Amino acid sequence: MHQAPECARTPRLCGLRRRLWAALLLGTAAVAYNGWLLEVLLPTGLDPRHSYVSELYAADQPFQGLFSGIEVACALLVTTGALLARYTLPGRLAAAGWWAVIAFAACSVADTIVPMRCAPSVDPSCEAVNPWHTTTSALVHFAIFSSMALLSAAAKTGCPSWPLVRRWGPWLLPCAMVCAVATVGPLFGGPGWHGIPQRAHLILVGTWFALLAVALVRPLTHGGSATGTPAVTYIPRPNADNLRQQRHHLSAASTEAPSPLA
Image 1 (tube, one colour):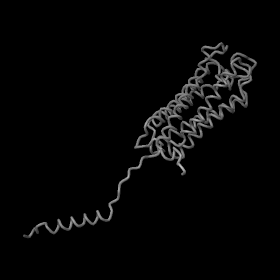
Image 2 (image 1 turned 120 degrees about the horizontal axis):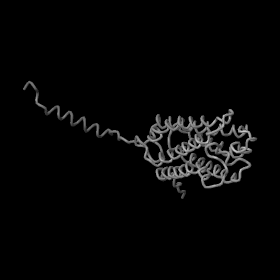
Image 3 (image 1 turned 90 degrees about the horizontal axis):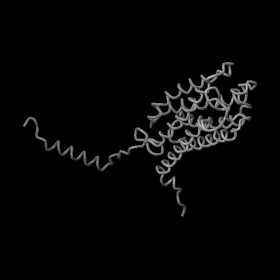
């Protein structure tokens, strides 16, 4: 006898498991995306105030393998978490937002495939603009900003809604964009102090992943179920027998009622 799969028999339980796994993966990615903090412990030779984080995995740097490996691991965590979470919030905006998260991960991997050739903050002869790396970095920013905008809008307009994302997403987006814009000085011949806003930007992106992780494990508003779909309350319709009994009682009551002229 054919037995139905577990997810078909217990969709609520499987939906909850999906959400918990997605939250765990995205929460871990929030920490991994700020793996640059290891530069405090390692002799990288770079000044965090005046260097890009991508210089940590430039082709000529001693810890290139470590930091590029962290970047790839973070991309895998984000991709798997987004694939698990993409059905938790209904609607096209939410779907597009999760695909933007996946695009962010793919572009992050591309960022490590075409790294900076050298570290311009310590090598005056090194050019700050590497066409391929600059392009992939720009795509990373575009994808993460798109995910913030789309998922925040979905949390606001969708039913059920995500109160945490609805409240904090619109604040994270402009703050992250301002920090990102503040890092472009070396691209236009104005180096110096761009490392601080870039690291602040990475912290905000990690905060965004952590916010998504917390939102996944908190109950949805408007009676949402664990699978992310709105709960439907069943209201039984009266059958024909009940209607006939109600009409009989009404007619009997009107017959027994005394006439106002009596």
